[in-house]
Every structure is written in structure tokens, then in C-alpha cells.
Length: 113
Length: 396
Image (cartoon, rainbow over all chains, first blue to last red; front, top):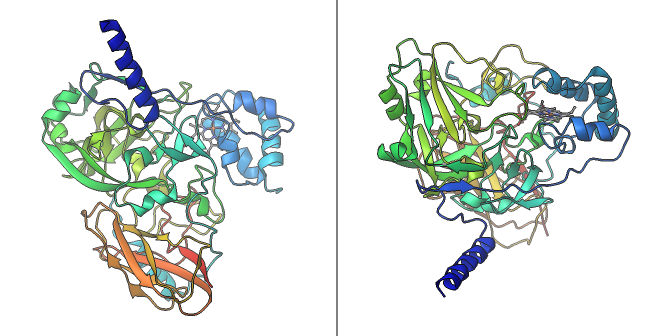
């Protein structure tokens, strides 16, 4: 009997939480662990030659959606962006792959310049 | 770092007297992001998705009709993708030390044991409005929704630093959080403030936003609040406070988050800056919230033009509004004053009699006379947008 009541309360709490995802259960009380689960949102890259390399190499540190978020950029800016990822952040990308990726970026997300 | 001693307004005065201010550029379609891709993250309501990993989420425009931004609506901006998703307050501590007499760890109970300070302050991303830069620049493509007005509560940073005993030769105080890069080669987001700034009265280690614990995505369990300064210094999920005897020179201090070292923090579009300084105090802004760009209004009927205005910690002295593209300006009525760090709402009734197209503009001035330039000022990182925005409406 007791068990059933506990379960009912738990279920009710779960439903309440599900209905109000914006109000965490007493987050910040000194004796609690506060946790969240991040949603996974698939990237939205355009199809084109080099996309496979972009999906593997440009998704290591962040979603590759950093790419479609940008305005259309000239080739030299995409080149600088890719080399910033390599030099400033240590992206493990060799020059050969970098060329393929820059070509993809300027074709699919470039200004044509 | 030196305080900027003259304002963009002063620059504008000089610039216009030199004939440097060019004619109006194109009017952007809307000052706020399209609500195209709404997503719901934990503890947040539907926000505009910029990126999911790390989360970068923008506040939809309708929340800017409110004086206080609700916790679930405040924008989210992380730099590195290893962000804290679970924090155990039994073990979480802020380590305080470095160039100090003592070093120690602070628990949440320790923080809550210090005098509690509460005030309302605008939090704004340095790149708020970046998507409106012309020519466009790379980076987070925010509309104007990377800002919010929140009532923060916490312990004074200076009380914590006093307990540590800052040594006389200290120059900066560095702040680190629980987030980190996915690869070890990615620089950790550590931000430093000049020591005299860090010791100012109003900086707090905030553990509440609008009377509730911080949401995880906004920096649970505690974040730095540097009222009046851009949010890049408001380090989330604080883990370390380190007093330094040498300036911090890691990636996120240099070359990131720097502005041209001149009064307008601007350079000719498309060029490269010479000397730069770390970004610091926010400039003065006003934004028209209603009506929206592209709205059609009925002729002869009164509408209320309304919006918000804020500055880098000096309150707002006045807001003037023009409905004719900047020829005639009328003073708007200011709303409830929640203090110098808060935004203030303003409104002006308008009864357009003639049909046609109108360009609405609003211009705020803070208590030390800093105002907004007519034209947008450009810098390569797309920081500090604060020109007088234009909202085009049609009267029928």
C-alpha cells in the first residue's frame, strides 16, 4: 500500500516536471545534485563534395551548424576561419583536408568571390 | 586597462563636424531575429536556435516588452562544448587564490553566509546585433536578442577578495568556470578584469537570478556579474578566482574580445585595427520594441511607440523619438526606474494622420551624456553595436 502511494506521488511529480520543464525541482538547495540533459539537434549542412570531411572534422569541438549560421563569406574569410580552427584551437586537420573543406565552404556558403 | 575617457558620442560630434558621417545605409528588415527555428532546452522556454553544441540560444522579441526577462527566456551563450550539465553542491567549490595572502575554497553555504546583495542589471553579449553589421562579419549571428534584464543576487566579489588579501603588486583577477574545450588544445574560457575593477563595490558572485537559483545554462550554481560591462566577463559556473601579478594573455583575452583602441571602438569597414584593448563597458542603446519593422498602422489612430534603453552603468537620462527619419525628435516618457544598471522602458504616443511610409528612430542618452551614433560603427568582430536603429512602418 505504502509503496503504491510513493509510486503515485513519484509519477505525479514526473508528470508535473514533464509539463513544466522550465521549473527545475528546487535546484540550488545545498544538499542536491542539479542535472540537465541536453537535446541532440542534428546539423543542417548542405550536400556537396567535401561534406563528409566537414561532418567528421568540423564537428569535433562544436556542431557543424556554426557553418550555416554564418553569413555568406568570401573565400579568403573561409580560408582564415579554417586556419583559425587549426592554429588557435588545434583542430587536427591536415592541409589536404583543409583545402577540400575550404572548397566546400566557399561553394556552398560563399559569396562567389 | 585604461577606462575609455571619451565616449562614442564625443566621437560622433567630432566626426560630424569633420563631415565623416555618411548618409543613412539600408534599413534592416527587422532588428530582432526571425523566430524561424525555436528549440526548447532544459529549464528554458522556446528560444531561437543559433547553435546546439555548445548551446547558443537567442531570446525572442516578445520578451522585450517586459521590464524583467524571465529566467527561462534569458539568452544562452557558451564558447566551448564541454559545459556543466550536472553539479553536486556538496562538492562544488570556488577556489580562491593566486597572488593573495591566503587561498581557500568557497562552498555555496560560504557564499550564502556573506552579505547578500541584490540589484537589477542588463546582461548583454558583446556581439548582440552582430547579424546587422554591414559588411557582415563571422561569429555568432545574433539579432538583438542576446540581452536581458535580470535581478541578480549574490555575494560581493570584493568581500571574497578581502578575505583572500590581494597583494599590492596584483594587476588582474582571473575567473574560470566549469566549462572547457572538447580537445585539450582548445583554450579554456578564462577572463580577467583589472584589479581595481574587480574590487569595485557592485560586482557580485551571483547565485540567484530573479529570486531563483541560476538555470544550468545561465551558469548554475554561481556566475560573476559585472554590471555595466559586457557579458563575456560574467563567467558562468564559477570554479576559480585567481589574482594575478601579470596580465592574462590567453586566447580569450587576446586576440578574442578586443576592440580597436580608439574612442569609437571602430575602424573603416573591411579594414584591420592597429592597437586594440580588451572590450569593457557597454555603450548606450535604445531599441524600439513596438511597433515592429514592416508593421502597417491605421491612419488617424493612436499607437504607442515603446521600447527599452540602457547604458554601461550610468542609467538613462532621456530617450528621444523621431517618426520622420530623424528630422524632429520628441522626448519619450520613461517607465519605472530600477537603478543605473537596469534597462528602462519608454513610450511615446503617436497619431499618424497622413498615409505613407515612416521611419521610426529612438535615441537614448545616459547620465554622463553618452549617447548613440546615427550610423553604425564597424569593427571586425562585430562588437558593441549601438547606433540609432531604424524601424520602417507603413500608415494606411
